[in-house]
Length: 212
Image (cartoon, rainbow, N blue to C red; front, side, top):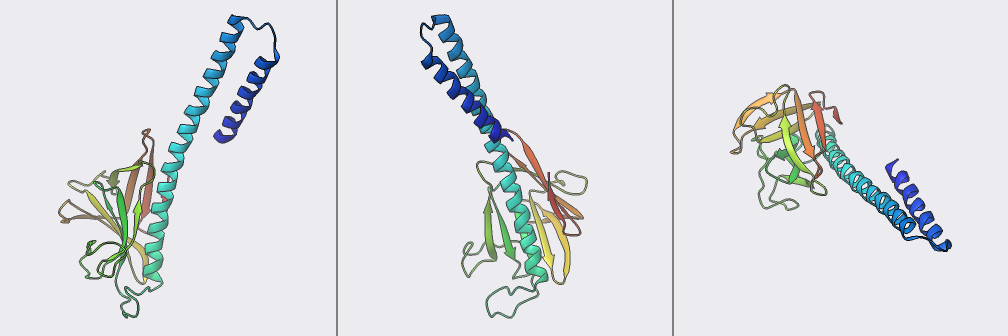
C-alpha cells in the first residue's frame, strides 16, 4: 500500500514540474510556492520509503527466525543424521539465541549437554552448528521472554529445541555462563528495528511458531 502511495506522489511531483515548465510569466511567489509543495511531497515520500524499509527488515528477520525454528523441528521428527553416515539419529536439534549477539544458530546437540558448543565454527566438521542466522539491516534482539517474565531473572540466552519423535518444543533459559535457569512452556524473541518498531516471535510448547 505504501509503495503505491510513493508512486502516486512521484507522479504528482512530475506533473507539477511539467506544469512549471509549460507556464510562461511565472511569478517569483508562484515559483516559491511550487518549489515548497515539491519539497514537502518529496520529504513525505522519502520518510514513508524509509519507514517501509524499516518494517520490511523487521518482518524479514522474524520470518527467518520462524523458519529456522520450524527447520529444527523438522530435522528432529524426520530423524536427520547428526553427521553423514554417522548413524546417530537420537540427538536433539535446537535454535540458540544470545541477547548480546547479532547472530542465532540452528545446531545439533552432539554431546547431549543441552548447550550450543561453537567448536571450529559453523559449516565445519568440528562444530554442532548447522546454520547461522543474522538479523537484517541493523535489526537487533532486544529481549527474550518466558511464560510470564521477560526475561527470566539473569537469563541472557534461550534455547528452543526438539527431540524425536516428539514435535513439542523444549524451551529453556541460561545465563551468560551457560548455567541453567528455568524451563518454560512458551519462548519469545523480541526484535527491534533501527526506528524503534518491535516484533515478537512466540514459540509454544506444541511447537507452534507465530509473530506479530
